Length: 319
Image 1 (cartoon, helix red, strand yellow):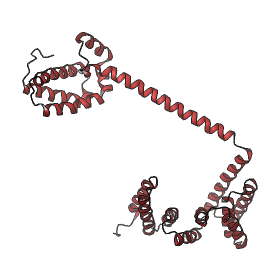
Image 2 (cartoon, helix red, strand yellow):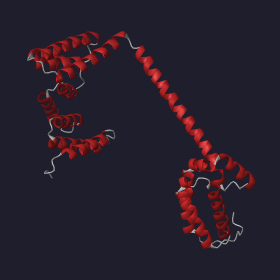
Image 3 (cartoon, helix red, strand yellow):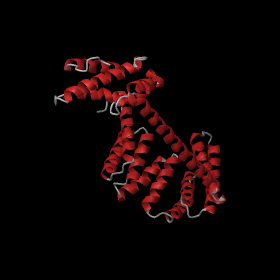
Image 4 (cartoon, helix red, strand yellow):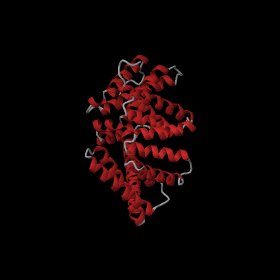
């Protein structure tokens, strides 16, 4: 501590600069933690003397406040370079007033640490409870539902396999396996239209137009609107590599509803898959405009990301 409590304003400013440098480089101040706290006490005593005289101390207070905030943020590091025992011993020897918060940063850090531990334990507890409930719920699914989910998973895997297979005979066999699994799914839940859409698209791939149309007609009757039917059909067309058919379905939607977010978004995805970046950007730009107008907060950041990524892929020669 300074022997002379009557520091000049220049003395206080010099101490603030010393304090600021030490706090800014706290990781290099091993063994000097108590010295920093003593300097802070000297500054406080000097300022209090001027405060009692109603002196204007705004510049000094502002600079000091900035580094006080930094010291508080680094309370963990301060405790580390000072040592808990040194904190306790010095506090006992000096018996600082409660408003000299810097002498209590070790206790504040310990309280915050315990809060963080409790918070993490609570979050882990909630996570495991949710995980247990999900697992328990899945185990409690009716056998029909579990079988339906298994069929969906198998169908999607076979679709992915068909897109990378080169042997035409193997591809056709995969298609017939998919149709068979769709029919089994329909026996379990005939009111669910997705197996009908997949079955219809596969039949179209196999040039069986009458069976394809029958499946689509049956699926359409299960949808609340034609737009929902066309959007889902376009999605499965796209999944099966039938991009022209997907675009035709989307075109029908957009004729009736030019502001269909789902149709424009999927259209952009198809153009992007075809490396038609200009048209994809046009579609996504319209999606972004509509999403912002309709306050679709989940779509806005995703669409912005898509646009940014596409712009990086444009040829440099384009404006």
